[in-house]
Image (cartoon, rainbow, N blue to C red; front, side):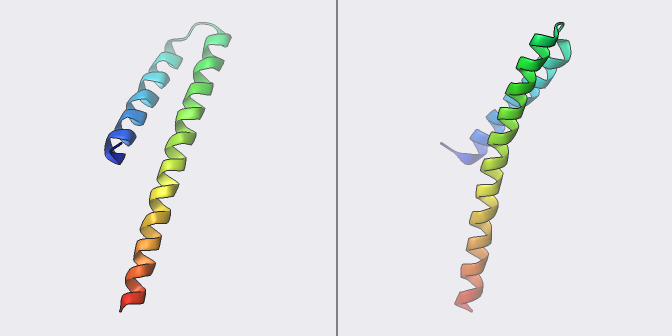
Length: 66
């Protein structure tokens, strides 16, 4: 899957979940949405960390070539 599309879709889902959580009436609904928001945020974090690691690795490789 295209990384940009993946991040975009995760962001859209996160935004939709936050909006739904703000409209939730019961505590159970709020807890359920907060778990979804946490999972989506964690997923985005894992992906961003992977991208950062790969960028750092690419820069390290570039320095070695000089």
